[in-house]
Length: 329
Ligand code: SAH
Image: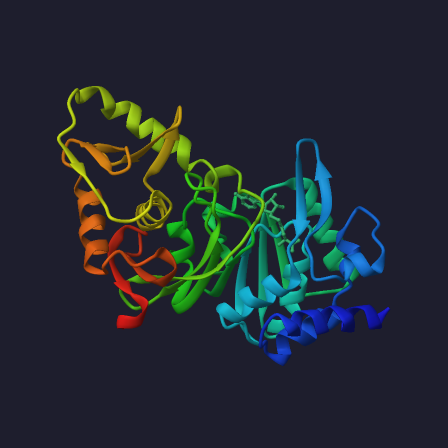
């Protein structure tokens, strides 16, 4: 019934100032067909997360609609755009976006789970949508075939930003992604913009998403593996780097700057190719921790600005380049 969708759109409008294109798209798509569970309409059309499908030990959810509207706004989603969604689940958000971008545009949704992917195919065909494509794959690799994209929307908490997304994004295009910062159990979403020579990122909002699997959810293990290769070459620490910020702020900034943190037996480490540091209320360093020192120096220049007010700079490979304060650009 159309009234319920109007009720949903009213709730979304209360959460922010969104384009009519975006709000109207939510009027076009019935949310219940994306769920294998039956909910009452006041649940399906509330501005809340709903569990849409389960499979063995995993499940998928349809994210909070007003948060999706905020993500669409943050990448500047408009008619005619080509957008890549990472973690498309059973497809609700992708189908809403298909209405925002219209017939001249395209939505490509990548989902790692076969069952959820199949449900998304079914739903899109029931709605006779021709401008949405679903792919069953690990989203880390993006989807080369339809590149370049005008935007990438990530709807699963990822541990790092894939260089493939940068490669497949047009210049001036944006990525919005919730980052799973596992050492502090926080999921800040950032907007990454590709400029003609670099990538810059700003905090958007704090979120809660399902944690990514596959290559978007194995960063801790990868860093632990790098650590185990170099650990034994050092017996004594070389220095201690004290920072005036809290553990919470420090680990957040270092994670988002470098994707180099890992955790083992309650200890947190920062890993480089031939050096590492261990967190002890400051960094106890082993070997020439160049990247760590660079980040610390850049952060000092910003007078230890909190993560939410920083601008992060990277190269196209998502390697750290520098930091700035938001209010100084
Ligand atoms: N956008 C969806 C919400 C999906 S929840 C909607 O509107 O309904 C997040 C999804 O990300 C889950 O379905 C999960 O299976 C998927 N996922 C987890 N890791 C992934 C990866 N590496 N690549 C692609 N999808 C992934």
